[in-house]
Length: 261
Image 1: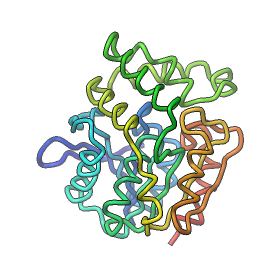
Image 2: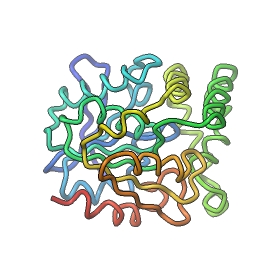
Image 3: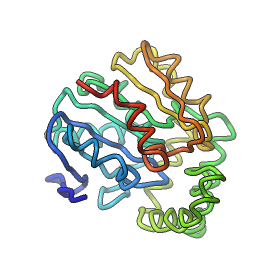
């Protein structure tokens, strides 16, 4: 798949773009990068101009600090820089979905639809502690120290048993991330509480979740679906944290009715 590489005039935001049509903007998870959407982008790009933003610390996008508002501003600037239309669909997985949700709450008028794949609006104590542990490990020994943790959060046991190479693939992705930006994101996820803003969200929203997601289990996704007015919820059987990567065909089928004109 050939994409156009984009860099903002300031040099601090990078992205990849492919396809023509209505804008579809994608935000990747913390433990993956934009390439986690490679299995679904060829199909999506037949109908959409797909822009895959590199979150701060990924593929040349610069760190913005440990504040969710800074990430929201990053997305707002990216939409402006890359001339994304206001009828755009915003799609996010994992941490990228949390950022997308925060953006939709703050700037719902800038998008027309929101697709969230395995996303939490806030984490319980055990979830917060997991991010603290990852951040401490990275501070002490770099991103290579959490490769096993990352693989087990992104994928479930049956998937890893079938595709053991996924562990090394996660390690390769992690080693390209800015460690400081990764720790910033962990701090944001510890502090994040977007639940109070959910009832105010007016953007049509679809929540898709893998049944076996260990990072953001179905119960956390259902909080969003239950509190956002009119939101829909779809659960994918035997799927983990990253449906576009693990079950691309099922993911595309799940979002089809929601994203079509």
